[in-house]
Length: 257
Ligand SMILES: Cc1cc2nc3c(=O)[nH]c(=O)nc-3n(C[C@H](O)[C@H](O)[C@H](O)COP(=O)(O)O)c2cc1C
Image (tube, rainbow, N blue to C red; front, side):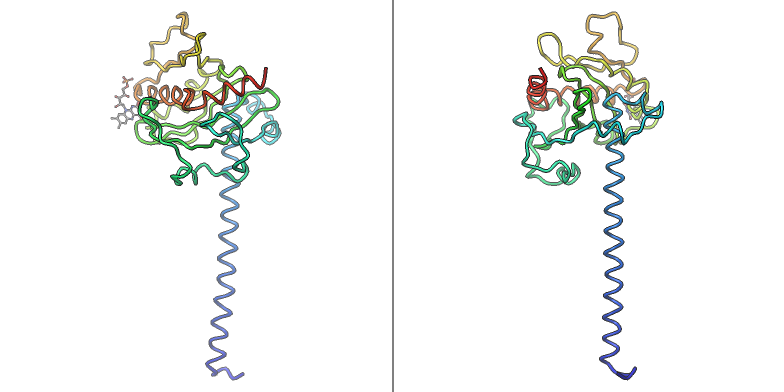
């Protein structure tokens, strides 16, 4: 075929386009894989921190090994039961938030943290070595939505840890929710009182009294960031109410007896 032929020109252009589109597709696939992998690593370290494994990690334990004790499961938050309706491996919490069919409006009377809506399903992490469960929670901060995982022992009441992984709070003020000092306080705190009512609370910085009767439910707030501290208290209260994980925790505790 002559180099001047129109057919040859079109053929070369076509082949060039084909090669380029294959290269672009391959690059996009590698990027998606990388994003998913990075997300998995972030979730893994957050879940381990909320599960109370930070000391072991600091002493050099392998994240991968510790995380192998965990099993991912889907929970229908409305019924409080585990469900196979959705594959936990394929579940992407970010996609769910953009899908109105997967979200539930929170009735005003139950919405103590002004979250407005929450997903129907949650991907939870069961720690088969300790029996505890690590749950995703979120709620508005002073400047934007805050996302965390919280670990609860198999008594359905004792917190093993709280770890925020995304927020827009101010460094040095609200962002201190990520500080070791604030987080350490959550370990061992009780969500519910003896009558089964939610009792966990974040009080203004300096107002925590370790000898008070309610000390086991109380967290000392953040200096200069009372608003964020209060909002963290509110979102934890919502997520452990009946409209949040209340039903699931009751079922989970019963199954562990
Ligand atoms: C620029 C700016 C950013 C702030 N960021 C936060 C914040 O992220 N979280 C917070 O609770 N308070 C923040 N504050 C302070 C609040 O307006 C408020 O004064 C504080 O929460 C009250 O806490 P305090 O009673 O402990 O001082 C910020 C204030 C300013 C001026």
